[in-house]
Image (tube, rainbow, N blue to C red; front, side, top):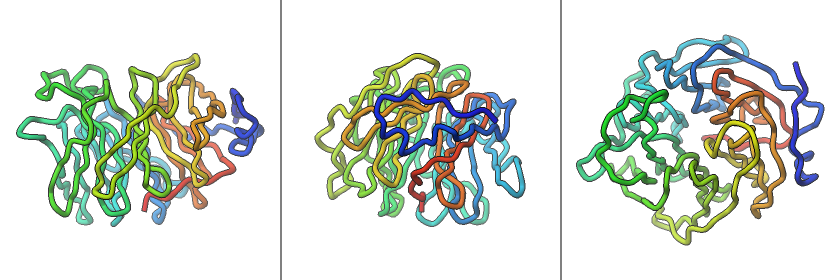
Length: 298
């Protein structure tokens, strides 16, 4: 396995990545991978092949399998607080939940009577509220089905499953994509792919957002733009962008990049100790070990 390559802008990057760590290719030959989500108790990874129209599953013990064929071109995935898989679907413009009996429940498909664009990435707050971004990529070729859109903006939403209410939090993004909470959930980070930046918002007591401001800008060479995003247990923020995985300290200081052999749309933390980083490359799934663990999804 090849050693990882780092683009170091701050020595604190070495607190996260051992320069001698190796990049392991777990699976290859896919069409366009996205949405990795690690199950902290069952110890498996689920992820999407969007144009392959399948949700895949991998574990150390069982290897690679198809978790769900005909996934409606699922993109982002996560788990709710009961350990049920939540998915964003490009082909059907829906957010769904896979219930314990393996039935799919539609959680969101329309806003004010109009179809959502194509839900993209998704996170769950500890109170069960679901936050997701809704750019139009799933209505375009390559990772979607070309069709007219019904909403004139690209929104960020909050879904309350208990009350069955969907609230538009912001329509001020060009194309919102990846999002994640701070560890204490007082902040929500949201990136904007065409703008190559990350914004941060205060999370109000009612779950709405306030005081949006610029957190960081992404740059550099190589394929990719702001996409999947998460924080680790020490508050560092990781964002897939040009050339690989960009890492920022909690104050927005750019620490550097983990360079990748291809475009990396998304990633997640996994393994028994959450010190594994699983990278969904455009056509391959990679893994490396890191020195700071992530945060479990539930």
